[in-house]
Amino acid sequence: MNNPVTVEICVDSIASAIAADRGGAHRIELCSNLGEGGTTPSAGLIESVRKKIKADLYVLVRPRSGDFYYSDDEFETMRRDVLLAKQLGADGIVFGILKEDGLVDVKRSHCVAELAKPLGTTFHRAFDMSSDFNESLEDVISAGIDRILTSGGEQAAEDGIATIARLVNVAKERVKIMVGGGIRETNVHRLLAETRAREIHANLATSTPSPMRYRNERISLGAVKGHEYRRVVVQEERVRKLIEAATDRASLQ
Image 1: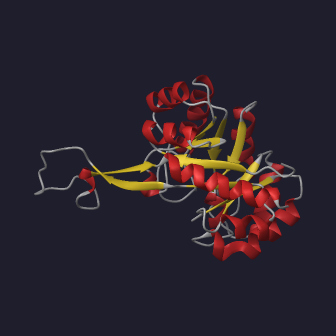
Image 2: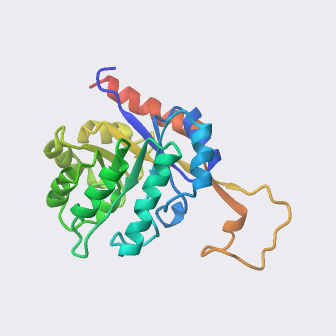
């Protein structure tokens, strides 16, 4: 293949990580709390997944849900989590730090990137929440980060194709642009062809019933009633189909 595409799958459990790995994912992003956009997974989860998969493992470093402007205490937590991810065998980390004005916090981002070395680094979709994509692109590059995950500032990458294509063109080889946001086997052809990106990120989890036979339907412990008896798990076959679709498109370019 002349222009291989790297497929990254986002997971938040051992079962999903194993399924993504078996489905052929090149890289796995491990998170917790995906319902809130993802937060840092526990040390136990990182260690367990590392032992179970062969694919590259990138660990999300995000101390809480919500915005991406962090206090000094939260930033120190991020630094400690980076060091822990390194110790537990991660291949890379995923993070994003903004200032109050919505621009990239270059100083702190550079600090995290340096601390993570020699691991790979991804600036996640905090980029899509930034106030100026042109300036933020240059800031991420100056911070020494390897790639940017983006949907082009839209909820779904399909709606941000023009912006993503422009970012790919401006970035050239200075930083990798990874496309994420609603990617499926049905739209990956168009996204790759029109953006010219070579990396994609997908969350292919499917809701499945819990095996619990006894259920107390009177209470709910989460924000959404009934979620205690549902599990969201990545399906191996869906990963395989996405990779096949991405490979078919890449082979034509």
